[in-house]
Length: 337
Image (cartoon, rainbow, N blue to C red; front, side, top):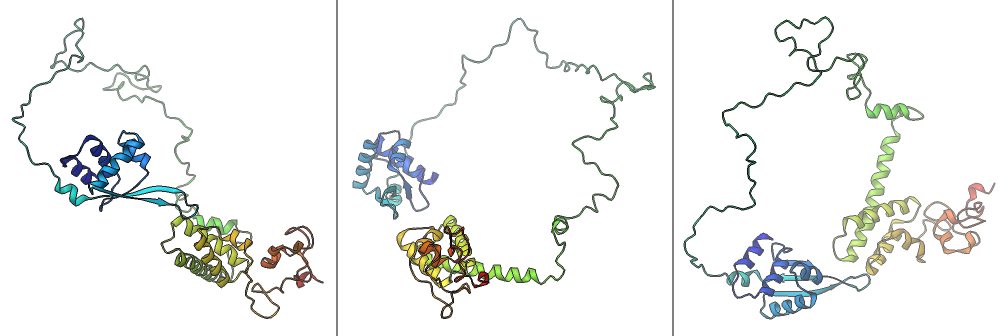
């Protein structure tokens, strides 16, 4: 913050290296003096080597002006940007006492590189009127039959003759009410639909209700992820998890089962719910004996090349290649006949 940089400017008893390090840190502080930056970034902005920056940080930490702590990624343990904090109260107490530097005189400063007038050119007269601008060659053209002897005849002549064809930059309107009667975007979409407008109108509320239920369920899955994570979920991760939860719920996976998988992911630092659901070996709770949540019978154990994916997802229960062959008649009774 600029206020913290001003404190560094006014602080006394700082050597050049300490001043440069504090200025680089103050360039990134929040209102409480916290800084999140890499040491190499601080060193580059302070115009010093990394080794010198580390030495200056140690000097400032010894004077209790700066405190730092390393940070590591929870995913792979790699070191990430450091956390610094400037002791603003101590820095403000080091404010330099006012000093009289003597009278300040303002004198005229001139530069030798100033442009000089060309002695061969005519002197400029302030009272002289501006030079008349010559008219373009076609300014005096007039339509056939125009009276050039009339008052201002040449001045009133158009620069370009009017064209009978419309300009490509202006809209072409066939009649006065064409713009007012233009169909709206919603009407165009309705006309372009295969069946035209929805005759009953009952399908739209039903779809909206299903969409709201799916959004609420996906929100509960993300809430289970955030509860184990222990901090707010980033916007990008939240949008990804909600989108994947809607997709998996549409495939018939139980909400409670997805919440359990989300808790497992948060504990391990993972963010791909679809991949974790495919790789998980946790059993899926059933609605009734012999029937899965999607309404299909339990996996027969023979189709889908015997892989766990066929047990978790009905679309993999095929007789041929996994997910692309003929549906298994035992797992899909609707195709048994």
